[in-house]
Image (cartoon, rainbow, N blue to C red):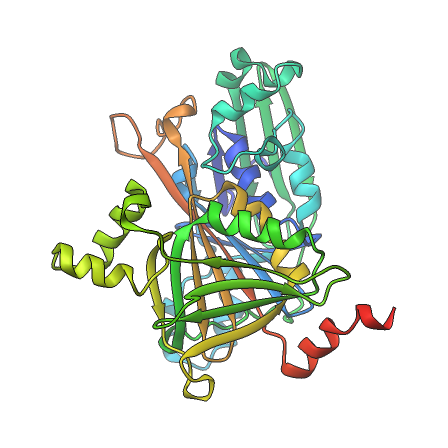
Length: 387
C-alpha cells in the first residue's frame, strides 16, 4: 500500500500522551475507532451498562491528515434515500484490539502515570521516573515518534514507533462494527445534577470507599440541605462507609475554593459569594442540583461500585471532573486532562500555525453508567448476606 494515499495519517512526538488517554478506557479488550477531521474517537463498552469514550484531539499530534474517501463510500451514499446524503462526510469506523494497541504503544517503555501516584496532568517529564529503563532515559525522549496510518476500508491500522534509529512497525487487524454498539444516551436537556470539582477529590473518595469492598455506590445530592453531596458504599462484606463533601469555614477555605465561588457568582459581590457558599460544598466549582419531582428535594441514585472503579485511572490523571446525571439516572463522569505540549520535543512543529511556545492541550475522557433499578440495588446489597 506504499503507493496508496492513506485515508488517515498522524504523527505524534509523545507516545505517552496517547497511551495515557487510551489507558483510561482500557477496561475492555476491544474499542470502536472513528476517524474524524478533528481527531480520533475511541469507544469501549461492557454489558451495555458502562461506556468509556476517549477523544484524541488532532492538537496532540505534530501532523494530522484526514482524507475522506470518495469512491469508497459510494455504496454508502447509494443506500441513503435522502437527496442530501452526498454532502454527508464519511468518517471511517472500525473495531480494533485495544489491549494490543496499548501493548504496542509500550514497546519503547511508556510509563503508566497511575502506577507512580500521579494525580495531575501527565507530561513527558513523568518518563524520567524510571531511569533504570534504557528506553526512558531523558536523552532518548527527544528522538521518539509514533506514526498512525489507515489506508482504506478494511486495511489494518498501521503503527510505526521510532526511537533513536530503532523503528518498529505493527499492523493491527481491524474489524467491521457489528452494529450493536450504541452510545449510552445522556439527556443533555434533562440534566438533574451537574457538579464540577477537582478530579483528585473524587479519586480519593472512591479510594476510601473501595477499602470496604462495597457492591453499590449511592450518590446523594441536595441544593438546600446537608449533606449537599455524599457518596456511600453499601452491600459489601464489611461495614458501610460514606464520604460527605461539606462546607468549610471561611477561614479554612483554600484559594482554589474561593476562586471557585467567584466563578459561580456573576455579580462578584462578597455577599453573593457568601450566600452561594452556604448552598454548595467548598470543593466544588459548579454545584447545580434539580431532582425530579418524584425524589423530592434530594437526588438519590445507585450504581454498581465495580463499574465506577473502572474510571479510577482517569480520575488519577485528570485535572477536573464534571459529574452529571439526567432524569433517567444515567451518570456521566467527564474528565478534563491537560497535557503540557512544551514538554514534548517537536510538538507543534508540523501543520499547526502557531510559531511560539505551546500551552497545555486540553482533552476529555467521558464515562457513562446505567443506574441500578431498585430491585437490582437490593440484590447487590444483599449479595454478601447470602454467602
